[in-house]
Length: 246
Length: 255
Image 1 (tube, each protein chain N blue to C red):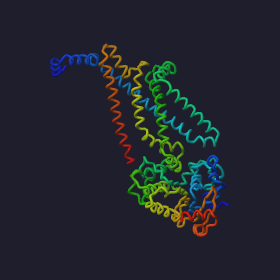
Image 2: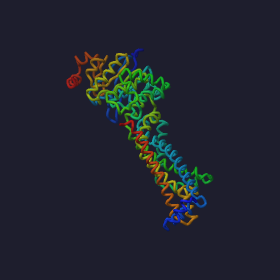
Image 3: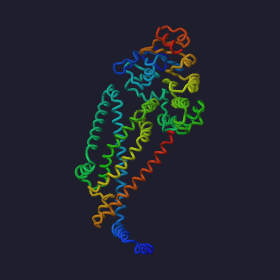
């Protein structure tokens, strides 16, 4: 049953690359304000699942309902839906030819029609929150990895999305920079943002997640609250996986 | 003639006097230096507008070709009119590239002048169109390489913010591409500047033609032709220096 509280719902979501079936039918409902952490071995399809949610990967089957609209319908305008789905990438993907401020304001100005002043005010406020206001005029190449990822997060937030998708946001970072990015994500979770996070940070999953999904072999093998999932894994695959990463 | 020059001239060795006579005959008498100046203006006008046209054609072709190469699977799956359109556009682009790069620019210019635009007398405009179309084919391949060199993550980041395909190209990919292709693009401009020297074939008094007209009038080849060569050389050097400055400025963002 779809309740009013449901933000994203997938039904039998499938994705195959040629003859390889990566996602074999994923059904999930994500509520507003929920923090869902997706874990699983590499090659299990967890990144593909996340990238299907905003159709960066085109699903080969099933439907995705976002805010009550079927966004897999060819007639729907995916660009409008994507404005409300922020995404953060493993490799940051900041625009190297723009300053931090420009990175953050280009989409709100061009897509939401904000004035330059309003967009910059919004961007500076967010930069303030992540402690990077003084780097507003820097170019991405002048930032550390952790700073880049924090900018990437607030760049997505500038569009005031309904949900934030994180694709292994700390995997490309030096260990000493992981903490600063996770701290920003924790604050974001506390502020009530709906988040879907693919990560290998089990500590983050335990502390912040409302629900953990274990994806393996293209299906959701197991899901539940972090403490029950981590303390009391049911499937052999999950036990095996947790034995390796914890 | 200024007094100091008369004094210098009478005391100079014979070969210097010959040089001065030659210079006067070719450039001063009958204000023939103005021919060179007008020719230079014409060469620069044709080059400038051909480059603009070439860049516009190049960007459009490069976008068509990369869109086709990168997304053909998506188009195929979605089917319908979009798939047919991109297939047709790509085929036109390929034919254009093959024909334009496979035939000499002089022949293209003559065909434009005597066949396609035979009824028009505006030879300057015809030359701009001919050189622009020619340059567009080369620029398209330069741009295509540039677009392909941009990390796909840039593209995904743009799309994930809600930009559509064309907006992502315009705001994210193409500005980065220009930086990558600038040296090659500069080279194309230099090639084009020199290629316009065949404009005389259709009766345009460009720089080369002006030098040749002077030679025909004075029956002395050395002065006008060397002068023409030096002018081309100076423009190319000046332009190379300017682009070097621009490149250093653009590099500011990648320390």
